[in-house]
Length: 140
Image 1 (spheres, rainbow, N blue to C red):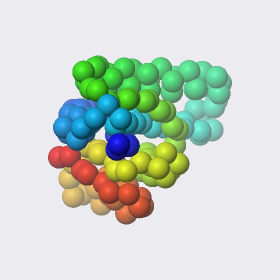
Image 2 (cartoon, one colour; image 1 turned 60 degrees about the horizontal axis):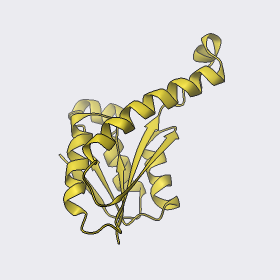
Image 3 (tube, rainbow, N blue to C red; image 1 turned 30 degrees about the vertical axis):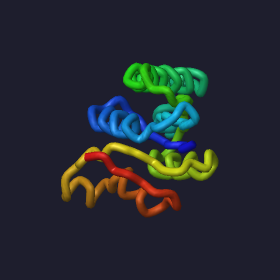
């Protein structure tokens, strides 16, 4: 039995990670955890124009759209599939979920910002590689 965490954002690279993870499923006892991380939008400017309830509804709708797309790719898998949404910094939230769910590994796509943008903005994949204690597979 393997428990695999797959961070998803609806991008083609995320879809590649899902397809790669499917190839790793060997029994119906395997568990695939699809995780979508939404931004917190916890800024004074956003709070001036939207209530906490409106922000939460926006986050849930956006997450549901991504997770539904990802679930469609997994419709034929024999594994158990669970969906999760977290709010905050993607790198940190992926690592927290991996630890809390005691996953065996993380399989994720790599966006490929390029050397300049990556140096300025950082990379979620790089952050996860440095912060988590479980094996990580980056699917290009």
